View: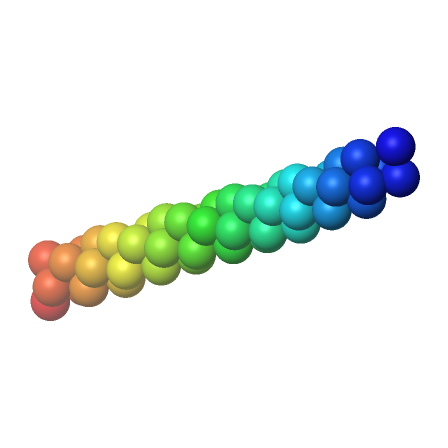
Length: 57
């Protein structure tokens, strides 16, 4: 009986850590994706501004 409790506790801790690490990785990937989108948006805006300046000149 006692050993069963120890084994299940060990596995529950592993599952808990797995969930925590999985959540952290997911959040990190979302943050990187947003950063990439923002950078692309800024580059596109700068490119458009440069094109507009080129047309006016």
